[in-house]
Length: 374
Image (tube, rainbow, N blue to C red; front, side):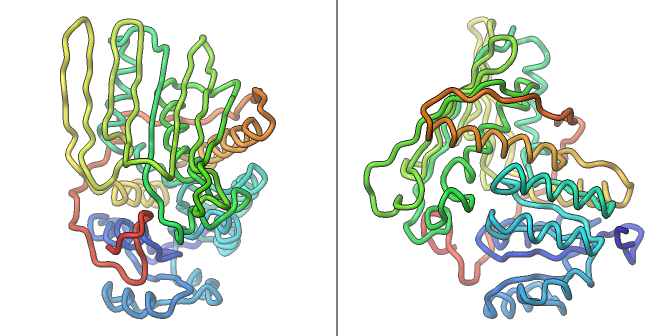
C-alpha cells in the first residue's frame, strides 16, 4: 500500500544520490515546488550528507546502508543514483509504499524497466521518469507546431547533442552494461524528442559507434550515430558525443517548413526556436525556467490527486528498448527491427508548468561532467 502523506497538500521527498545534477538542480528545485517538501537526503559520502543536510535544514540524512530508514520518513523519492542502481532503489521504494520519481535513463535494460513497472503496480505506487522537457514551454510548443500542420507533413528529425566529458567522470568510467556512454546519458534526449515530435514509435534502428583511441574512452564509445525509421516513411537521425564541443539542438522538417531548436535540451539556459515557413523566418526565445521544480510539482500533484503520471514507466521503457537496439545494431552492423510498443500517453501543451529559474548553487564534492568544479 502507498504511504499516506501526513499533509493533504504536500508530498515529503528523499533525494537519493547527491551527485552534480542533484546538487545543482534537484535540491534547489524544492523551493519552487510548494506541494513538495525536501525531508531527507541519501548519500554514500559523509561530507555531502553533513554539509548539504545543514544547508537545507534537514534532520534526516542517511547513508545508502540506511536507505530503508530514509524510506520510513517520506512519501516519495527522487532517484539520482547511477543508472545501474535505478532498479534496486526503485523496487525497494515501491515495496515500502513510497512513490518513485526516477532520473533517466530509466534503467540499463528492458528487464530492469519491467521490474520497476511491476513493483510500482503491485504496491500501488506512482512511478514517473524524469523527462523534464515534457513540461518545458519550448518543447511543448514544438509539439504543438508539428501537430498544427503548419510545417506540412513531417518528414525528418535530426539532432546533435555533444559535450566534453572528463576522464574520471562516471559517464565514461562505467561500461555500457552498467549504463555508461553517450547514448544512455544524452542519446535518450534525442530519442525521446523524435518520438514525442513524430507522435509515434520507431520500427527499425541502425547505428554505428566511433572513438579515436583516447584513454578516457576505454570503457565506452566516444560517440554514436543513429538512424530510426518511423511509420509513414519518416526518418530520424541523431549523433551524441562525449568528445565534441557543446551542442544541443534538433530540427523538425516537414513538407512546408522547418523548426530548429538550438539550444533544445538544456536546463540552465534559454530554449530558442527558429521557424521557417514559406520563405518567412520567425525566432522565439523561451526563458530559462526551473524545469526540475516543474517535474516535482507535476509528480506531487499526481500523488495527491491519484492521477497517473506522464511520463510513466512505459515511456522510460520505450527509450531503453531503443537504446538496447542501438547497441545491438552497432555491435552486429545490422538493422534491428522493433516489435510494437505498449500504448501510452504522450506529452501535450497542457502539461506546461513554469517555475522561475534559480541561481547556480555551490556544490559539495562533485563536478560537472566536463570536470569543472561548480
